[in-house]
Structure formats: structure tokens, C-alpha cells
Picture 1 (cartoon, rainbow, N blue to C red):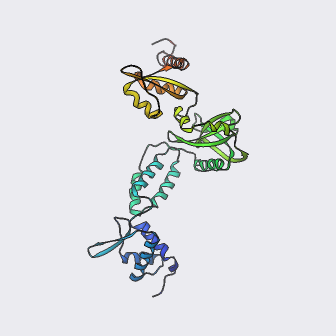
Picture 2: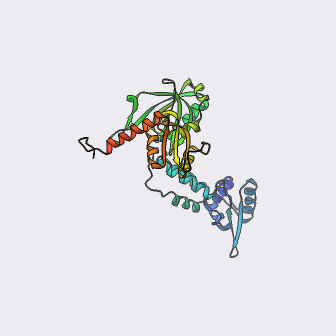
Picture 3: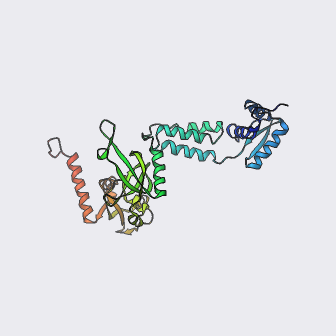
Amino acid sequence: MAKGANQKLKMLYLARIFMEETDEDHGLTLAEITSKLAAYEVHADRKTLYLDFDELIRYGFEIMSEKRDRTCYYYLASREFELPELKLLVDSVQSSKFITDKKSDQLIKKLESLVSVHQAKQLHRQVTITGRIKSVNERIFYNVDMIHEAINSDRQIRFRYFRWNLKKEMELRRDGGWYVVSPWNLMWDDENYYLVAFDAETGKIKHYRVDKMVQMSVMKEKRLGIQAFRKFSLPRYTKSLFGMFGGKEMAVTLEGANDMVGILIDRFGKDIIIIPADRDHFRTTVTVAVSSQFLGWIIALGPGIRIVGPDEVVEQMKGEIRRLQSQYLTDEGGKDL
């Protein structure tokens, strides 16, 4: 029997057939496998296929057989990723704000290639999620990779940073001037990637939205700020920020109704110290970056939580309340409603 033009690629094509077209619910007969190999210009017969299956099994493929109506079906029983695991990854990619629609589609197609064409349909149905706000910066993947490269090689980076204007256009900050910083960490908050870096110009640790960075490059200069980062705790820094808005970091004492303790534990962790204030209330002290976002978060919790110290923060809250009263409880002429 003449051999096919691609006979030397037989095992590769056979592995592809098992990976792409079979799973626990979809097997192929020997005749079907032979026909599919023939489409790749590879000759196979029953005897050599049995030997090929053994070689694939020896290599690590879990080739199984199942008899139905006197016909034997062969399939690949297990893979590197299980279908529920891939569904979870697909959901994460699709729902992630920082990944653009185009890149989401590309990544999901790659994830679908890890299962059979039959199971890929389940993943395709899984990704039909509408109304998600997605990033528009296609460079974000390369930005993340470049930041890792700079951290690993102990180099500074430079980039331009944009914001949106009223025309819904990208507008460069600092009139298009360069930001030069020393990258130390990447963090994830509220579905966005942030770079935590040392800004030598101000001598401070700052954070930047990675999807708002453009024209990034790794510089030759070594990173600065090692002394600042030796005392830096990323988990503590993350917990202290609200909506990634910075502010003066302070120890703030909160008093709340007993049934509100879970909200504070969810936000600040189980390590916070809870002290009974009376039968119905407790007190705890947390370290936060005091900003209008933090004050707004406290206001949104309603009467169950209040700030009791320090006086500086209490006064900031009173000022925020007066601002809200002025903004919403006066008419256009400035008179109280």
C-alpha cells in the first residue's frame, strides 16, 4: 500500500485529530480516524493505528475506547485544562475591563483551542456577556510585559499618560510630557491593572493605571527608591486606598453598630482589632488614605458607621457634609431649600 505524502507527520496529525475532534462525549471509529488522516494525505490501517494509539498513550495521551452497538469509539479522555477551568478563564477574560474586545476575542479563541470543537461551543456560549465596559488601549498587554521586563532587569521606565476629555478623546497629561518612574509592583484593583512605582521627582511612591499609559519604553538607568520600598507593604497600601484615590495615610478610628462589623472585615481583613464600645456598638482603628472617596464610602454605609477620630478626619467629614448640603440643598440662587 502506497504511503501518503505526509506520512512522516502521521503521529502529529493523529494527535491533532484526538485533541480537536474527540472528548468524553464524542469518539471516533477506526474508519473515521483513517478517513480524517487520509484528508491530511496520511495512510493508516487498523493494525498500525493500534500501535500508534499505544505510542500516544506512552507519550502521555489518555486514549480511551468505548463500545456502543458493537462499534468501538476512541477519544481523548483528559487534557491539561478541564472544561470547568476553561469556562472560569473565559469568564475572567470576557469580564475584565482592562482587556479590549479585540484582545478578548483573540484570547478566547486560543482557550477554545485547548478543548475539542464540541466543547469549544460550550465556551462560546459561555462568553455571551453584554454591557461590559472594556478598555480601548490595545497596548496594555505589551505595557504589562514591558513593566515586568523593567522590574526584572532593575530599570526605570518612561511613558506618556492620558485622560479622557469632554470630546471623549485621549488627552495627554503634562501637555504630553514624559513620566519617568522606577517600577516596583503591579497590582489589581477594581478590575484594573495599576503600576506601583517610585517617582524620584517628588520622592514619593505613586500608582498609575496601566491602560492609560502610552509610548512606554524601558530605560538604561537603574531603578531608584529601594529604601522607600523596603518599608513598603503592597497589601497594606491596597487596603488603605479607596477607588485607587490617594490621600494622607492616617490611622482612623471608626465606631459602628455590631451588625456592621462584617463590612469592615470584608474591606480591611480579619486582622483588625475589634473593641466593644457598648452593648450595641464596637470600635476599630484602620489605616487608610483619607480622601473624598473614603469619606463617601463612610457616608454610603449610612448611620451604622461613623468616624470618631482623629479630630482632623472628623473635621474633614464635617466639611464634606457641608459641601454636599451646599451642593444639593440650595436652589440656583444659593438659598436654602
